[in-house]
Every structure is written in structure tokens, then in C-alpha cells.
Length: 304
Image 1 (tube, one colour):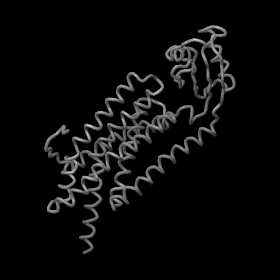
Image 2: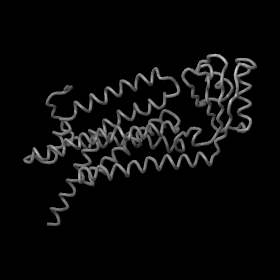
Image 3: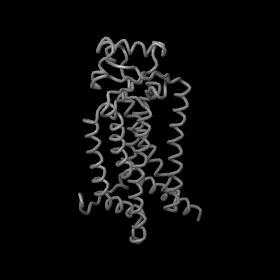
Image 4: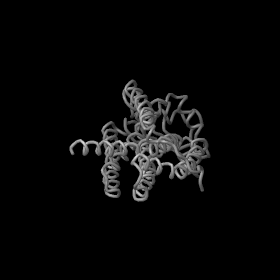
């Protein structure tokens, strides 16, 4: 299936335009993070309280959320289970002592649904030390994934340029996604970290498809320049890239609209990431390889 036939877009010729667009998006996100003092971290990272409640009858998540909002527990994380009346509620640290949060939540639900209509099954506290440890582990998870990708791609394509350029494109994707979350004042939770790691896997797969075509074209198109080879390769894979990304985006839009509050931010992070990741596979990763190899060739020529 071909969405486009015999396209001839000059991606390499417009690489500085693409780099400028990326820089603007990255700087906008960084500016938002600086103004807000960093990302808005969820309960998993900042510490807070966890309350697990089982209702005797079917209860809508929207009603639980509204009750919490009305009683001052705004932006609480609520996780529900299919075919069950159990809700796990995560509440961020606030002026209310963590030891009193569970009691206040219980009183709020009693006022709404009445005595004996639910059971508090579990209460826990997530301390700041636990949150700090989770933040560190999340950061290392992303860093180690990047290191692994550099080693794998460099080994597979016998070129450090491909590995480094691929990881720079991934850093570009993650930074812009986190920046968008900051601009929209969304929380970064462990679920969002999972979405970012998923995005890294998706984006590098898309990039490797383009790299594979470049490697094939370098054997077949020996009479062409590197820029022409990369342009041809990106154009050859353009239909595949757009069709694959479009099908994923359609699913993510459906999840974002109808998936419910539990996966709302997760699907949003992936939606932003897939769009940015598709763009970076075409307009960032391969042009970076071109810049790397061109500069290296110029240095060799200067030495001779």
C-alpha cells in the first residue's frame, strides 16, 4: 500500500528549517519548566497518601472524582477496576497532615453515600524519600535505555553517527513531550514515565526503518551524493512511516476520548510523542547523520 507515489521532498535541503522548528518547541517547553520550577510531579514522586475504597454498589468514577474535588482534594489520581467497585485514590501532599487525609476522605464519602455504603480497605503514605528514589529510578531507566540504543544501533549499522543521532532524536521527542505536559500543566507520574519509555521504543523503531533503507540505498546508488541517498531513502519510506503512525494515532485518539480518566494522560503523552517521534524520524535523525558524516568528511579532506 502506497499513500504517496514517487515523492521527491528535499528533507536534507530543508534540514535547518526542521532543526529550527525543533529548537522552538524544545525552548518553549524548557521555558515553561523554568517558569514553573520544573515539571508538575505526581504523588509517586512528591509523596502523599493512598486510600483504597470498596463500594457496596456500582459507583461511577466521575462521582468519586467530583466528591473529592468538592472536598478540596483536587487533581487526585483515581484508579478503578473493571467489574469491581474498588477505587485506589492517590492524593498529593498538602497542608492537611497525611495521617488525617484518609479520615477526611472517609468523611467526604460518608456525606455523599452514607454510612456503611463503602469500606476503606487500605491506607498508605508515600513519603518524600520514596518519591525521590522513584524519581532517580525513572531517570536512570530513561538514560540506560538511551545508552542501550546507542550501542545497538552503532553495532547494527557499524556507525556511531547513527546511534548518537538516533538517541538525540529520542531526547528531542521526550523533551518536547514533557514540555507539552508542562505547558498544559499536566502531572508527570509513573504512568507517564511508562508512556515515555514506550515512546522511545516506538520512535527508534521508526528511525531504524529509515536507517535500513539508507544502508540499502548506499549499496545501490553509489553514483549519488550522501544527501541524495538520504533524501531518496526518506521518500521511499515516507508512505510506510505516515500510514503506520496514522493508525497508531487513530487508536490513541480513541483511547484519549473514550478511554476514561485512568489512561487519559497516558494516551495523551503517547499521542504527542508519536506525532513528534514521526517528525523526528523524518526530519531530525537522518539529517543529523548527514551533518555528522559531512563534517567528518570535511575534516578528513582538510587533514589531507
